[in-house]
Image (spheres, rainbow, N blue to C red):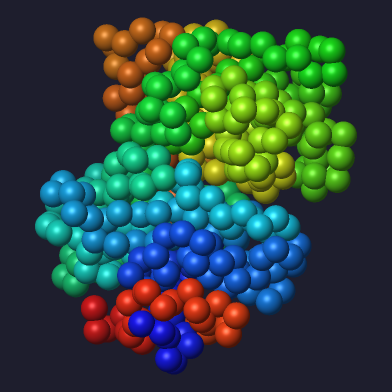
Length: 404
């Protein structure tokens, strides 16, 4: 059916330190080239400013979430995370965004997707929560969100006193349980190479790396091995083309090592976005345990991705991994890992089962806390040059939160 009113219902949601357009999946074109064209066009890509679309010219604002009711009996919603390239014509569905996933639970609650009342867990005893089970289609893993709700109405409560680094103000605490996200990209466990340490060569130098696949797949290396102190500003790193070339080579060779691309030099085409790269170093903040600069799409993240934090915490418990070697004995025994990033820090609750090995740990707890806020609800205009993308899509009705 062809779209007649040239608009599609949409909700703009902040999750953690990212923002995304949220769509009911039935309101966008079917998966394929038409969907890709539509999502690129509404974000205004490719263009470094994304001036003719909803993108905000940063990776943390060039994101989309597609939500539908799940057919799985123990899952409330299927959540497809979409990372839209800014300068490049890329649309990736393969991964997940921990920050945006924190907004999926509130969206599901308010849209009436939650199938049954399940009391959730909270870090604040004064807050009532609803457990929301979320199937992430990119990693094929189930995430569990504990969403603060109004006991009388059952709707998401945004207001609260919990603050996160990288976002002003405060909100209600949303606990995200990622303990079931092992092998997110390759389904080959925590360590896709089976090694705590591997070595690659960059500019005739041996670089120790750890490839860890929890939440999202990330290749970890010491910042100093790439010529960094580890506390540099993201803008300074992005403006260093020689460094970005080394990061890209590191990413490409790690991707080739685990079969995500055939030629490391073609990694951007053969494996866009993933794996991420995390350059770690000792913290400069005495309250933190490790410092990180995370790279996605050959750019430094302005803070820390939620999945990046989860994967870092998991890697910290792998004996002799790049991250583990940076921790003091006191830090490695803690159940909360505080990760320093450019805008502050993010704590991750991590607890290993006593029966698991140090090399390949099993996680009893792997979770973090975010806040979220519904920013806008309405409809987005469909430009004429992508109207044809909707010939097979369901005719979208005007969105109304009160009608749900």
